[in-house]
Image 1 (cartoon, helix red, strand yellow):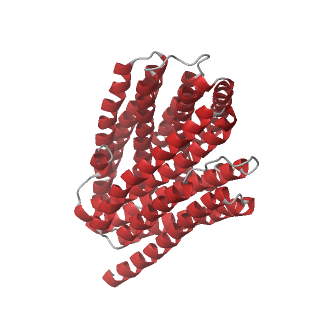
Image 2 (cartoon, helix red, strand yellow; image 1 turned 90 degrees about the vertical axis):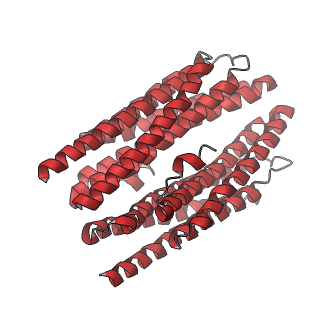
Image 3 (cartoon, chains in turn green, blue; image 1 turned 90 degrees about the horizontal axis):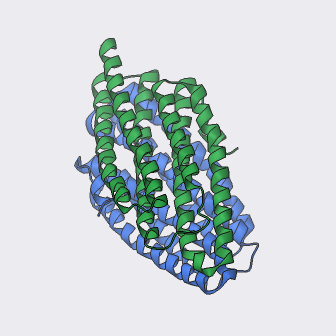
Length: 220
Length: 220
């Protein structure tokens, strides 16, 4: 059974990483669709989201079956319950990427705002957090997880910088108000994806160190 | 053991409802702090959030202990894993309420926007969804859960109405841009709390009917 457990856990990790890489792709695509004014790419994000949703259901069932049949305890139990939480975060990241892609389709109808905020930089930083948090889970590496939590500060700084830039543009010219507002909401979607990655990283620290940092890191 | 299970589940429900009523209170308080320009009330929301966080950790541990010691299967297993997801949603609703209370403290420094959007109505609708979703879980009532999912449409409509009103005010006068933007973000926080309640309700439907509606209701 021990061997079986390891194999099943490996399968679970594989599916989880697949779900994660799909979500990473959605984040980058959604922002790219906005920057390069590409409606087709924006629509692809919605298609990817269906795959992400299906993977969530599949992994959720794998976890439930595992709990029911293997009745794990201690760290094995926490690994499975963490996986169930992680896929919820991933699924919601996917929803945020869909929101961005819908904003892209709206924004692409109007002339681009100039100067255009550095949303790709924010998206790149957030995508790295997603990757980092999942790698930390699969490798049960608390140090990598802590690095993810720390990089959330950088994401927050980038978000606030973009927020201020856009607010300044909006105040300067009434014509910028609507477009600026939609881009602020896009930046906020990205920032929330960073929060989800932080949630995953905090779960990993709890899993590995048995120490609950969830309500410490957040409050710093 | 059967009797024991029932008792433990009752304890779990009690704690979960306590956490829920704290979160409901936070939502109403945060919006009230904004409307009545009451910084003290806004700060109370942050204090309540600490209690919510502690309850999340406590209930999470209760669930893990239950899984490890009782090794439930079938619907009992799903009840516990659902509870673990529900407290994550509740905790994040609490975070949204804290965001609103922080916006309130910011907004209270400036003259109020006029006409002021009907955020209390949106907050009331959202608070009812939270209550409804938790009652549906505790009573394992799929019909009530479906009613919660349906009322999310009403919340979305209210959100879009407020969004449009504020955007119009912002476009009419550059002086309104900053305050209008912050109120839009508050409305969005409320709308997201509604999404979390919908997530809970969908979990309940899955739990009771064994039918996964999570990726159907959302996509309507």
